[in-house]
Length: 427
Image (tube, rainbow, N blue to C red; front, side, top):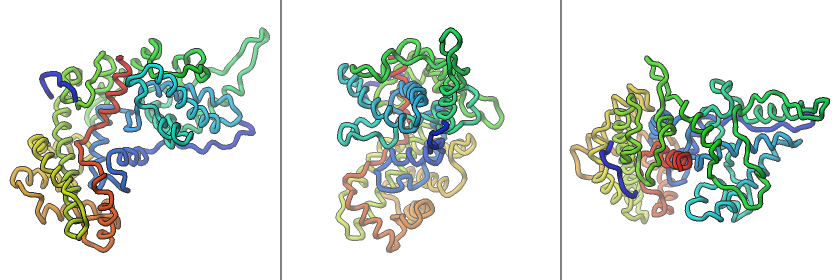
């Protein structure tokens, strides 16, 4: 795991048409954010492994997360929206306004303060709200982290239901004989610290800096996080909980297994799993690199004009990650329930390890056929490697953007996002 610290790198209200984000939608979002943006990106099924390992280490997190204070902004905005006759429209306006306030507030600070403002580009360019606003991106986290309310830990309601409950509390509020406000008992966002004075009104804007009470609240919630229980054991402390409890500030551009301060906080039960994750990360990256190299090669054989970018990158990936990739224990990945079964993907990854050990050439016909078969099962008519007329059309489409497509990367298990959250917590 690395022995030294790395350097660098209502009554008249309309229905609110929202539903809880499903795991399928989260998977789709993660897949789109990991690849080149051309349709289905997870061509081989690696996302299931990526998600399972990330969920074990960092429960409740998502690739859509940017900054930790959004976990407080969303509840505060929903409480404000519930006071309006149309909470849905009000929340949309509030989230749009939040983007502007964050742009203004962080501009005054400079540096990296503005990193991670959701919707900032479309706000500046089109004066529109983000397609995936904070209440979308952070909803699952609010539940998993116990911010939504501890009674919702097992049965997660939709945002529609929560807004209706908040609005009901507002409608039921009144005054006593002394003119004091009387409100229903708070059952949503229990223990939530109050927003700062002038929240959503201060023209000087907002920042992502946590006030002491906010930091204490979030640390308490995150340190209570448990990892998914093994089939034969009780829930265990999660890696994220251990990191929240300790004032560690992860290095940027460094994976957790290469950061000694982070590795020192790994729970005992996860030490071997971290080593496994490191090797699986390398194998997943090489598998993705092989796929792109094969697509590039198939495009060239079809007479399409493409570079050797992905084939050259495969050679680089093999040099950098090959030794780790061949050490990935796929049987252990299956045994621990980390998103892999004994199926075509298992055979593909196992054969990829054999190729890494025995050959220095680009994968031959037998391994290339395995990649084509796995891709066809996942993408059907959109597969590129299967040699059909439809595949030829897909290759033509791919070749037009090949030089702008993303190169293969190792599986990152959301660490980039988690690192940002932890830096906000321990800043």
